[in-house]
Structure formats: C-alpha cells, structure tokens
Length: 117
Length: 112
Image (cartoon, rainbow over all chains, first blue to last red):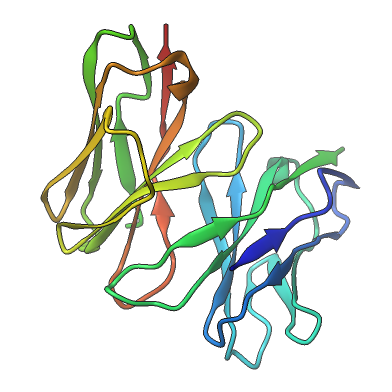
C-alpha cells in the first residue's frame, strides 16, 4: 500500500527567506511519482511540481524545487525567496503505476505555511 | 490554458433536495476526477472517469451519482444527502499520457 507522510502541521517563514516542507513516502511500486500542490484559502488545488521515480535530476519550477532522495524515500519541497502570497496549505501527493489513461493520487495530511513580512 | 471550471461555487441544500455539481474542462483531457475534502483534511478520491467511462468508484454511497455526458463535462448528482456530506467537492482532469492533475476551484457544499 502507498503512504504519504507530512510531519509538519504548520511552518513559519520570513518573507524573502527559503523554506523546506518535508514529505516522506512508502510504496512497493517501482514506477511512481511525487507531486506538490498548493491550496490557498479559496480552495483551489494548484499544481506546483512533479518528480518521477526514474527522473535522475531533481525537478525545479521557478522558485520551487523538489529535493528527491529515493533511498530515504523523501521528496521535500523547497521554496526559495518566500513571498506573502505563498501563505497556504501545501500537500504532497503520490501516484501509483499509470494505467487506463488515469492515475490515483494519495495525499499527505498537508502543511500550513505562513509567510511573515 | 489549464483551466477547470466548477459550478456552483457554493451550494446549500436540505437532506431531501436533489442537486447537481458541474465540472467542465476544455484542455482535451480524457480523465476526470471527483474528490471530497473535509475541513483541515486532504482531498479523498471519489470517482474517476477515463474516456467517458467510470473507471474507479471508491465505495462512495449511492446518494452520490456521477455522470460524464461527454469528454469535457463531468457532473455529480446529489440526492438525500446527510449533514456529514458537507465538504468542498473538487473536480480535476488529466491528460491520458501525462501525470499532472489540474483542479477546479471547488464547490463548497453545506447540507442542512
């Protein structure tokens, strides 16, 4: 069975500083992927970044980077130069093997990030 | 354009009402999903449609009835709901060859 663990219920960071949100996972599948989504108070889930299990390079998207350590089964999100608009709930999610043109996502409990001026 | 739209934004309904939630995407995605999210919890998958056919039903009670009339549209028909069904209902879609799911803004449902 797949499992995603986010151990930080809440995090605080000063504006313009970097912050790391932790995510560990467990799966017996060889092919899988890790996602990070941002959910502001408005409710919409915003896709941030994706890392496949066979990808050799860590994924980056603008100020977001994913620190993927396969042996440790961790996929931490690093946000550089935090902005006030980054205040939101952040979910780590994992997909299993891809079949039938769709994939199931399993979400972690989430980490609420607060950026202070 | 990575837009998934959902209507209505908010819905209040009594336990004897029948209502429907609507989700639409025009990205050519062939997989569409319904999630339920309770306050302070992660989303939980309810249904998956792939190529307009129901592929996954995560043991959802029959008072929730999904429908996929065409490849761009996904409905969730609601009937005889309970107060504990009050939640944010999120729709998502994904391309059949890629992994990212794109979510709509959700419908906040309150059952009185």
